[in-house]
Length: 307
Image 1 (cartoon, rainbow, N blue to C red):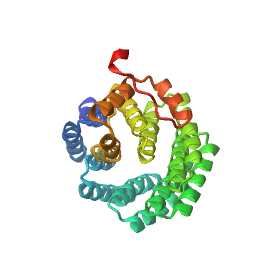
Image 2 (image 1 turned 180 degrees about the horizontal axis):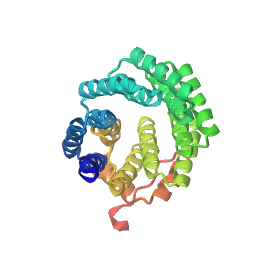
Image 3 (image 1 turned 45 degrees about the horizontal axis):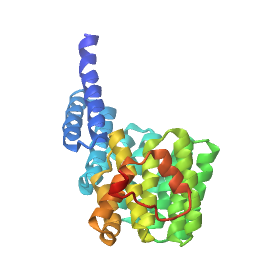
Image 4 (image 1 turned 180 degrees about the vertical axis):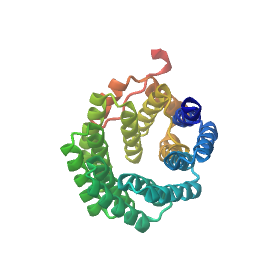
């Protein structure tokens, strides 16, 4: 009997794992179908925690494919279930996810309020990582609301919290956010220095998605400085790295990056732009990092006669 009872739970876990893998590879339709099956199994088992986990995954899937209203609804349901279950850490994580989608919907005040609640809960349970990431997300809300002093304060608090817990990934992410903020404030040299620290830390950690993310930020900055060739080289290198990792940008992220690169492509002859992208695609990551750390000069493209 015990074996028979365990089989549906095992099936739910296997379906969930397969769905996560599909989602990471950008196959959102397959991921949704598998998450739905996992959810149905958990509902049949009256497994409330399993239901909440499956709903959360479905919400993430909806968010990543750009369906923010569905994602918000599902995250709301998650928050309600975790409140019933009574674990403050689980409630805080669900609130953080809901706040993220709320921010993406442009509701900055509500997102900030949700993050405040989630920060209090993380502090209550002593979750240092939760506190650090929530401070970081509050920085994002402030930055998007153009409250740059508040954003800097949140990012610096976040960096301090990550440093205290020696969380290399968190430190590198916070450095990248501070770099973007410095860029917003017109301090290009400071932005470049911080991006350099961030990408070096991601490299030391072997965190290739982090490297790709920083290269995409550098591509956006190069495009804003009318350095079109370098923008396309960095973007091409990041795209190739994501291709090798099987970790594409979400449709929303891809659209945002394409809008940034559109100007860079328009300023170049089509053949020159394509050549810059392909050179970036073939560029070894270590060389791209060295280029990112070096002086901001327009790279020289190889001509067809160079092979």
